[in-house]
Length: 337
Image (cartoon, rainbow, N blue to C red; front, side, top):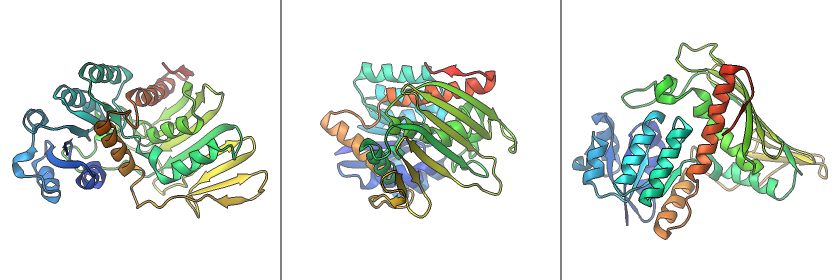
């Protein structure tokens, strides 16, 4: 039985990490850490973590709790120090996305994983959600031919508020490392890389703040050029007080895929000449592949196999996002390194 601990008891832990770990076969959730005692008590009592195993100091938890795996669920700027501390304490680590706030931080984390022999993975959970899996399968099968464009648009009225000590960390330059691009848009970037099976090589972006009184952007309009020659067009923001229509489309030279609407995934091909519903496995609301990525991580630890998302994969997505921010500042295309 793997002994699990969680660092950070905010909303994402309440919604996903703690409930999934509490029922994950082969895992016992035994310890939690957060700087807010009220959050610790709330989630600790809910998931059977004793008061003695509720820590306001994560380093003390790592020293005392004899853990095998740790989930890091804190603001982005804290990921590096906490993940490194956990690995140096002998724990395998699953990080909330993004892996960090800079590629240099990600590189240091990867080096520690190599030195300690601990596994490090990042929750690119939407790669494992039902709609993504069904869409990827249709692309792989060649139903839409060669994909040349992935189009993602998603605007909301504001950021998702946290539930811990700092409820607005997503709007703060240091804590978040950026705004909706690194927070919401990050999912769209790794999904596009997976759809195209091609890394991003160049980025051009317009990044701005138009509506919100915050430190980071509220609007990001980005073109990602892939090594294959395909393009991902991403528009994301917290700049739509009246709400907005979400768009997720994939264009190939013989067909199209569309996510959402009357069904999770739809496909149009030159052969059918009509939109058809793609079968998708059942998934509970707000799961979005999270149980699957946790199960895959646990299996990797138990069987000493590859993690579901490597640190290198996540570093690439972060580097592409960082290039978009640089392009937004310079007004010029930026290569991804």
